Length: 503
Image 1: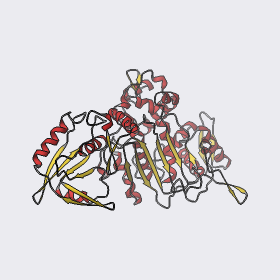
Image 2: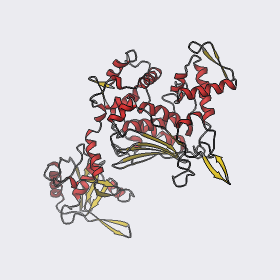
Image 3: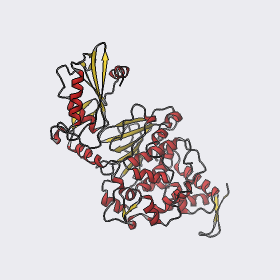
Image 4: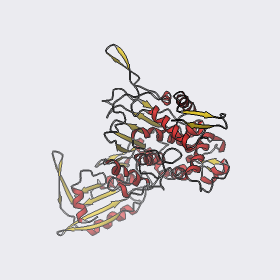
């Protein structure tokens, strides 16, 4: 930290990673709380030799300096590196700055890999950073810190009592088909399913890994070993819960595993962004420049970074003016300053590898660059927020998209699977049916079916279901509609025939 950077930080509004202390009488006792708080979150700077004066919630700062700065520096570094004060060594770095003869000490405290960090040999002396202050950790927060000991490792651990038979057969088929479509040169494409799972790390020594179970497992087996697994997707017809006409217009039903969630969520998010049809198996290229591509990277990041062992679950909330992706667990690194330049560390590295095999996500840690492309495409800033319990990425929606603006459209057949809380309103003594908001999903879905049939006349209903992200029965209803309106006809038998597009 330079003198210029220090002065700039004193003028910042947010101090979640920065703390000043006067230290006129020696090492301040409150320093240890801040050291622990930074160690337990994402790291930060502690600066000694600056006095803060607060009047009516407005702070001013004076550089007072400290006596015997070099001795204080050595005392603090020695204390942090030993285990006499804290339960683990803390490898801080120190800088001595001179302001017109006044010495200021700046210590950078890194995030610890051995959480929770506490002092005085007392777990109750565990502190976390909340905003610009240090707070004693709650029991829930300590539990979160305990789980962080397996950060980056848990998903690769083996699940005792599981095996190949606990995987969802349909999920394996659609996942492997996606790899063959998008990554035809993948070296394991020609293996049988079980060998494929062994080679890719879905199975280890005859057992499923946690990442493999979560990605492709049968629903009942996933719930047995990861009981809090659930990803909530909800569309709210307002800018807040309070100004919405009803609780929600669509809520996605539970899916069996991460892959099934991914397919449905990606198709649902299409409704809220520009997504020109591309020459890809599911209607867009894995490397296009659309808004949907940015959201897909955000979705993969959500799924790869979630703490699936937290009582909290992942959630995607679509409001009229924004889309929020919220995960249990903090960001692994601080990304508030220059998010476009951050290389993040995935909580579940094999899950992001599974997406990468299918070319549905960037190499681990680089997807943030693609998320930030949203700003270039829309002119609106993506917002990142994180604390010890959760992380939220918010995509503001362009005003013309306002996914739920206008409030009424035709209900599509796939919505029979959703719990719709906006079905009727009482208006002047009469019941008015309020349709799910968004674009005309039925027409868009049928247009995509027709486009897929043009490109591949022999395509099956199961393949269409995989591409569109709805059930085969819903696909069949759309096909019947297209036949009735004389847009398509079937030539030949159900098994060996072809689709012909008439219009």
